Image 1 (tube, rainbow, N blue to C red):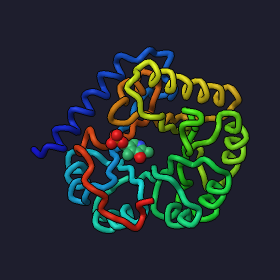
Image 2 (cartoon, rainbow, N blue to C red; image 1 turned 135 degrees about the vertical axis):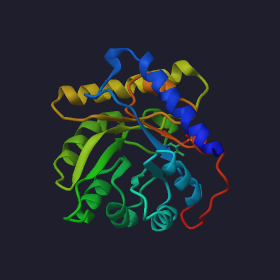
Image 3 (cartoon, rainbow, N blue to C red; image 1 turned 45 degrees about the vertical axis):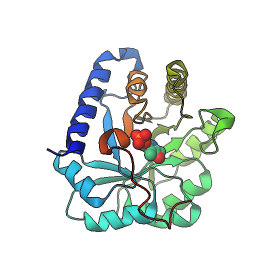
Length: 241
Ligand SMILES: *Cc1c(COP(=O)(O)O)cnc(C)c1O
């Protein structure tokens, strides 16, 4: 068994443990499930294949060209691809054509372009809106007070399916602060539910904080280094900004 297969199994076990420790009031989706998204940026196609053979089917990629190359190499596998990187408006068309999910939408312009570029014969593109939960410290994500307008507009786009919210909190070792930011996300999520939106996804928690994220209501955790080890140097330069 390879090292990353062992790590994958450890992460899966930790996720299950965190699920059992969760306060039932923190569960935001119907089935209470937590999905592991393996973040495979900067990992070779062979690494993804190994994880797939160990049962992992959902992968998150940050850089478009790198992701498209892997999709070509792994076309024989039934992988569900999630785009989780920053989205430039000139890349919306290939993103809309080659992914099932996009986390990290934070502007109407991007949502509109993804909607317009999603091929008619494909199912709607699954969307999470990225919230700037750390305030000034972060450049990406929509401000909390602009969220409800964006939710309303994105919900009306026919080729998008709004599933919920996503956040990348500022890195911190302060557990209380981590917890507080995840709680805030749950609060924003529940407020939208109360406004009548049917959402089922809170995409939050990475290698360093996924257990706390799950305890606070995460339904998708995005985990890279805890599965694959420290990332090798970037394998593509083209997308590296
Ligand atoms: C890289 C990345 C992750 C995974 O980070 P790890 O610390 O390696 O688990 C999760 N989400 C996003 C948006 C990322 O860019």
